[in-house]
Structure formats: structure tokens, C-alpha cells
Image (cartoon, rainbow over all chains, first blue to last red; front, side, top):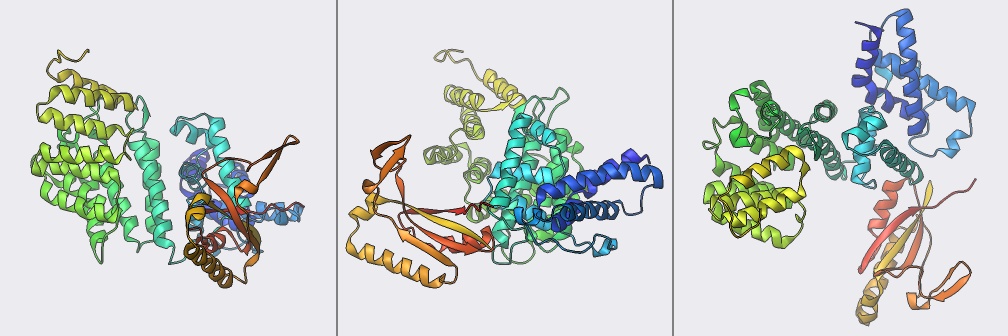
Amino acid sequence: MSVEKAVADAHRREWALVLAATARVAGDIDLAEECVQDAYVAALEAWTREGVPDNPGAWLTVTARRKALDAHRRARTAREKMPLLVVPDEADGQGEPEEIPDDRLRLIFTCCHPALAREAQVALTLRLVCGLTTAEIARAFLVTESTMAARVTRAKKKISAARIAYRVPGPAELPDRLDAVLTVVHLVFTTGHTAPIGTDLVRTDLVERSLELTRMLRTLMPDEREVLGLLALLTLHDARRATRTGRDGRLLLLEEQDRTQWNRTAIADGTALVRLGLRGGRPGRFVLQAAIAALHAEAPSYAETDWGQILSLYDVLLQAWQSPVVALNRLVAVSLVCGPEAALAGIEELERDGRLAGYPYLASTKADLLRQLGRDSEAATAYRAALALTENEQEQAFLARRLSALSPQPDTPR
Amino acid sequence: MAQYLILIYEREEEYASAGPSVFNEVMDAHNRFAEQHAGKLRGGNALKPTPTATTIRDDVVTDGPFVETKEALGGYYLIEADDLDEAIKIAKNCPARFGGVEVRPIEVFE
């Protein structure tokens, strides 16, 4: 393996570990980041000279921590100026690999602290935990690099100025704080899974990153059932990745997808995780969503899906998580169990509720129900509303096809 | 240790229309809060309502508060806390029945 490849691999796999362990010594995230970056640069040279070490992560951590300590020695006053995080450990960074504490959880809980805006949490997690560059994050979220850089800088300043602690929350706060972490990781996945804007439906890099993050969380918190739930959910969704678009890049609905192409190994893995997550006490929202995804994944066809059980899972989910998006998804199950008329009544209720105003799937679901009921002219209006709200070109094309397949509307200009 | 200001923003008109019993309840709640966090409190005051405010901007003196909003700054506590989590924990106990509170770290100039 070439040294470049070894360094790139270590960057992908070990970044969070190295940065988290270095942050403890550096006492400041910016300094830690700088030292970790320097360590990767140093690795390229040292590994070319001396060969790739057995434990690249430990090598990088020791090197980065030493750089952080040097920086502190050079500027003793820096510690007072940077009140963030823990008091730097005077451990000299020479320790054996097993002595370096695994601080990745502290790092991710800090990045996802509720005092930070959601978009800042996402940006910080990708920057600090995944080691993505600001430019890469900016590309993934389709904002300019300077916008993203400002967002990251603002968030880091707040961590430092407001003294957001570098710590894993205690048992009392853990459920809420963990939920915030899982929400961020899920958001990274959904952004990748259905890119909100642009020409491609899926952005694989974000999907991969979110899966890696969830696997990391599972290793670090093996007893948290919601972590299992999220891993199951992402695994099951991702098992359908290859079939979500046709050869021409066209969006395919669940009912149109070629189920023989679904990744059966991933489905078996995801389903096993769901079973594990359902064990013991009331399941949380991620386990329940994964259970629903598992039923879809195991169904031989759309028509033969166990819609009754899916509907009862949605009922439980809606109690655990009163989200209008869940309510909307539940209505799809209602339409298959009780018919489109019953679901349409629920849609109208959601419209009055108002929280989903601007959410394209509310309009597109309504359109679909109206189409099934043969109310084509109302369906056309709803499809147009959905079209105006979505910015993903594949989804726009799909809605446009649906719209043009309706019977001609003499009363509405086209 | 760091210092934070808990700023209490509430809808003034609700106090204006509330009776003495509400006022007493609020005072009791603040007394309880002050007692509960006595070790962390470094100061605090209620402010007179915004009609008593005078704004000075570019040397021009005008009546009224700096910004007209539904919720006005009605009082504050200065607290000491290890970090934001502790400050938030304290601020969550701060009474603000007609609004909410904002937590701001105190700037330290070196």
C-alpha cells in the first residue's frame, strides 16, 4: 500500500479519534485541529522514511498531542485566553496507544450541543468528527465555501465563548442529548439520500459518512437502543440505494423498485438490529422507524406489504414522536389499509395544522390520493403545488410526469 | 468558572393586566429561585417597565426602549457557573411565566 493511501485511509478512519484525544491536551478545538492537520502532514514524510506504523491512529495521536503541548509551552498564556474544554492534561503524549483515552463521544456531543443551531451542529460534526474540509462540506450542502467557513467559525467561537463543555452528558440529560446527536447523523444521511437540490438524487459521500458515524456510535455506546435503531434504519434505507433511481437517473417509487436488486445482506443486518433494538422496554423513535423500514424491506411486493402492521407501528411512533412528517407518512399507510378517502381527511387536517406548509411531500401525497380517487383536476393543482416546492430535479421530473399523465383538464390552463 | 447573565424577557402587558395574586406568585417564584441558587448568584435586579426607558443613539435622546418587541427585558440575574451546561440548568429554574430567558456569557477583557 502506498504511503499516500495509508495516510488517506488513516484520515478517513482515525480523524475523530486523533482529534478528540488531541483536544483534551490542546484545551482548544482550533489548536487541536491545527495540530492534527500538522500530524497528518508529518505522517506523509515520516511514513515514507520509516514505513507505515502498525497503529497509524496511535502514531498520529502521539504526534498531534506532542505538537499541542509544544504550542502550549511556547505560549503559556494561551491557556488563559482559551478557556474551552478541560484543563490540558500534562500527560506528555508519549504514552502507549492504549493509554490514549477515546474521546470521540465527548467530541460528537460537543458538536451537537443544543446551544448550537442545527446547521452548525451538522457542519461541526462533519468538520471535526469526520474531518471533512470546509470546502467539502460546503459542496455537500450547496453553499459557498465562505458561507460554510463562517458558519463553522461562528459555532467554534460560541463553543469557546459560552464555554460549551467538552463532555459526555450525564444520565439525566443523555436521552435528549443523544437524540440530538442521532438527529444530526440522520440529517447527514437524508441530505445524502435525497439531495434537496441538484441533479443527482443521492450523494454517496454523505451517506457513507453517516453510516460510519453511526457505526462509531454503536461501538462507543453499544447499549443504547436508539443507536441500534438509527444504524438499522440507515442500513435498511441504504439497502435500496441501487434501485431508487432508474438507469436514466429517474426517481423510482417504492412500488416501482426492483426488489430483486435490494441488498439482501444489508436487509438481514438491519432486521437483526431492529430485533435487538425492540428488546426491553418501550422502543424509541429510531427503533420504530427502523421496524417500519424492515417490514417494507421484507415484503415480497408493494401490494403484499403488511400495511396493517405498518399502520400500528406508525400509531406507536406518533405517540413517541409527534412530528407532522410522521403523521403524513402514517397517512400513506392509512390509505392502503382504509382507502384514499380516509387518508385525504387526514391530509386536510395536516394542512390546517400548518406546520408542513412548504413541505413538498404534503402536496405530492395529497395529489396522489386525489389521483387515486379520480379527482384529476384537484390532483393537478396539488401536483403543481408540489412542483413549485421541490428543488431536486429528479423529483421535479417525476412530479411533472405524474401531472402530464392525468386526464386533460379543460378547466385549468396547462 | 465563568459568569453568565440570565436575561428575562417577558410580555409586559400580561403583567399589567395580571392581578396582585399573580404578582405575588411571581415574587415567590423569584425568591425560591434566589434561595435555591444562592451559592451561584452574583447579582440581579428587576427593571421598571419599558415606558420608563430612554434610548440614546448617535447622541439623540428618545423615549422608549432600544427596540420595540413583544417581549421586553424585565430583569436579570448575574450567575457564576462552570460551563454553559450548568448555566442552562440554573436558567431553566428562572421564573419567566410570560416569556423566556436568554443566557449570555459575560465578556472578560484582558
